[in-house]
Length: 82
Image (tube, rainbow, N blue to C red; front, side):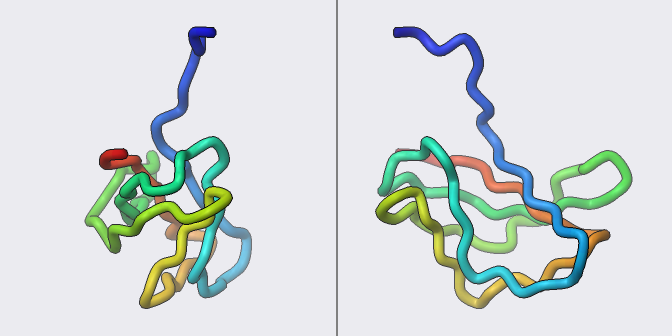
């Protein structure tokens, strides 16, 4: 089967401030290396790389130190390599 569309990036935004030390990426193979990048408003411009991590079992990614985010600054995760 050939996929008709594949979203290469995952965008995370939150309505209230929080600390994010772990997040889930649906459909990403464990062992894939990802880059976590700051999102800059307006227009969701991708900014600096905040962390690189490896996707673990079940699509979970743990980052240390944890990210502090709020409604004005989310982050985008990009797959770097398998």
